[in-house]
Image 1 (cartoon, rainbow, N blue to C red):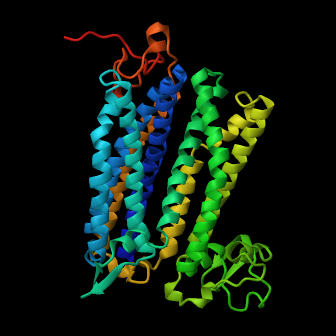
Image 2 (image 1 turned 90 degrees about the vertical axis):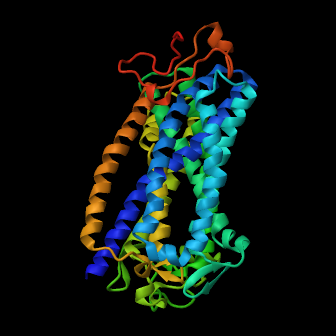
Length: 482
């Protein structure tokens, strides 16, 4: 009993910390690329709106980047403290992959982040733009290595097991394992969508309050274009990812579909798509199911009567927690459909000339602000809970990977994590939202109209970007040097 409780507490602690962590890298990935686009457009078009947006979102990026780094440090320590047997078993693969991430991505970001944030008036426009692009590339490289490590845990290959531990024999196969391309694309695009929704909601908040300056309109327009173009692409990537998962992790797909198999459906009838229902793991059925006949077969096999493995085809001890996987998958897909709907609605209002003043569109965009992050969390719950009971699929069970800590110690550390995270990151998120509430500052005067990287503007410290009053936060203030 104590071993099972310790396992549940260790899993809960890891789930809590990584759920907090993932929201920051997701926004960092999207904002870094957004900033590179904004600065490139400013240099190309000389339209100060892009520069104003760059300075506004660079402050949000700086705060978000810092919280992502701090929350990420905890993850590395947990591998050694709570999951020591996993580190012993698979450390020869996961260790180097995470090291590559530090050496190639984090060092790259750290080397140019200072120039990007503080070098606006100290370096030339070319070098400053190059620094912003390098930071954006660094976030994508980081995504590459993290997803390579996680994907290997989902679909391991390129290794041998010698004396009870994994030994890499082909690094190309380790990195480019069967699920890696799909996971990399799916997560990267999800980060872009989450950022577009965050930016769009920020603009909608200001537009609803009649703060319709050119910078606010521009960022809302850019966010809505991103949605209508990228959200359908994400749906196609997700479909391909699902087919890959069906090939390599059929039990996970069966849980996602709530499909038990056995005598549920006669041969040749096809597998229905269950829109809603309640999977009952004891009775081995999905109760109160609302179905569309044959649709699951059509999506997963591209055939009306195609068969897929049901949960009854797998031993009970090898099945994941079906209700969690079933519902988290539906949350992710449902939010994805709402993203497409928001993009289409915005396109329609743009055609009607009501993009910036249609109240229902603006309210829709505002409500959808956190939807991208919620969808990312739901997607990760689907893939990680769906992998259970394995931590390295088919090789190492989660129960065999956990460190032998007493449940009391794990409960205490989890409680401390919850308290510290809610205080520290709650304050950080509140500050970041306060930055967003201030909105972008419109350039004024001849010097502002023609200034650029390396000209006139003083760099601002991100943590001094919000003033106590309601003045022009973020606007460069004159000062003297001693």
